[in-house]
Length: 19
Image 1 (cartoon, helix red, strand yellow):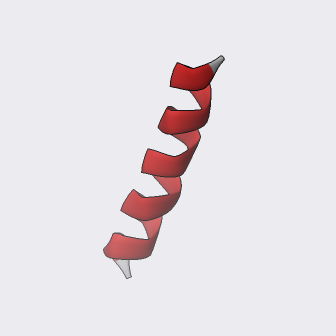
Image 2 (image 1 turned 90 degrees about the vertical axis):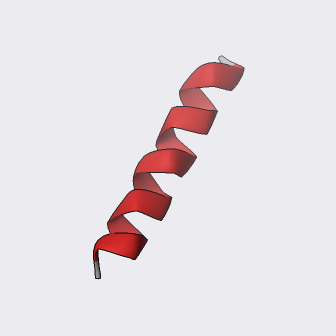
Image 3 (image 1 turned 45 degrees about the vertical axis):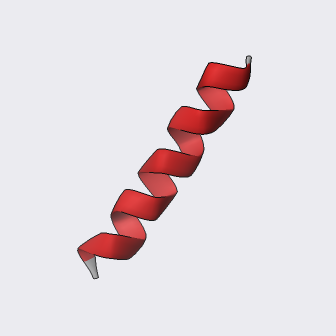
């Protein structure tokens, strides 16, 4: 479950960086 949360955070960060 921890890995899934980290993956979600990474996607959020990636999307934020995509701006």
